Image: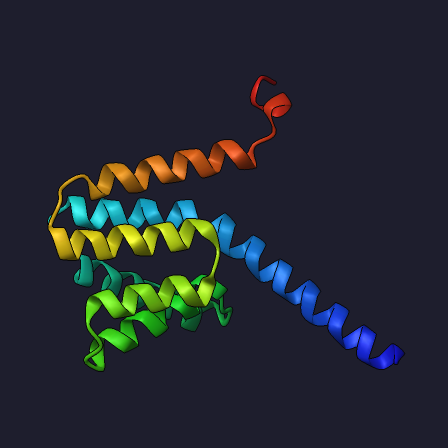
Length: 141
């Protein structure tokens, strides 16, 4: 019984650490994504560039990150013929954290409706997340 309980606790701890890492990386991901799309790259091209950057960093440092692995999975799906909408939805579902689910939803909406404002919506999402992560007392010190 203790062995089962111990393994369950280890899995839960690993899940929490992964979620914390992914949440910490979200603002950086969105910043780069909006930078690339703002510079005229397509959404797909931006993800491919992010994947190439992660791959190069992982090869040079030997360290993997949860967000990098998810980006590579997304890029792999795109290269294997999965539609962009399905790949973005799968990306959000795999991570299953609210900011990433919202991001995936915004990306799919952008593809389907072609509506402008993706960059602004993503930036607003990052600001809201940062406000939640920074305790109010430390914001004034």
